[in-house]
Image (cartoon, rainbow, N blue to C red; front, side, top):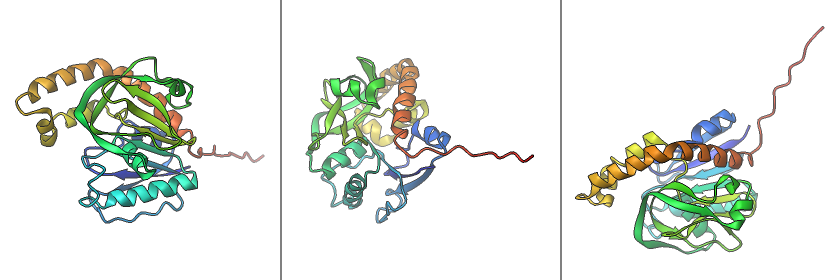
Length: 248
């Protein structure tokens, strides 16, 4: 059984489809909720995996969100210890920034379903190999990352080129939200701050369009999510089968 630490920043960005997969593998989850306790100082001692989730804050706002520096220090420590890491959206940007790579604002926010493709390195990667030659994946971000030194680009897009990377053999950063399921996307499309980001006058029309795409794309997204995240979780220590002894 593995112990997995999860950095969460806001209640509306949870583990999503990752949660039942982690629990089905009988791993233990500990949430570090920086939104609830921004001054928390967690320790990685005894943990076998780290998942860093998304959030509305951005790299460059460390003065307002000091926990971002705490997270980056812990990410560097986890990398040194060889602990598998998965970063999603802000989480991927935190990994990149922690390793000295630039994270910057994009010219235009990327929201909704976008077409992504694996690179040759992605096609050979044990986690990303489940991507087809073209996949529609859900997005909600306005920042992008450069690749950390030594990292390999695994997935690329047209509007935002760098979409997923691997550092070493067990550190993954995903810009996209493969963990998003129907209830989660429905929630995101009704958040006041997200309505403002969509543009209040155009919000309803954009919501209808995104939701229609969501209903069309979700089956494939859930299948891909299961394959990709299951493969990442295989990097964690497995639960040993219980031995049963029979007495005569």
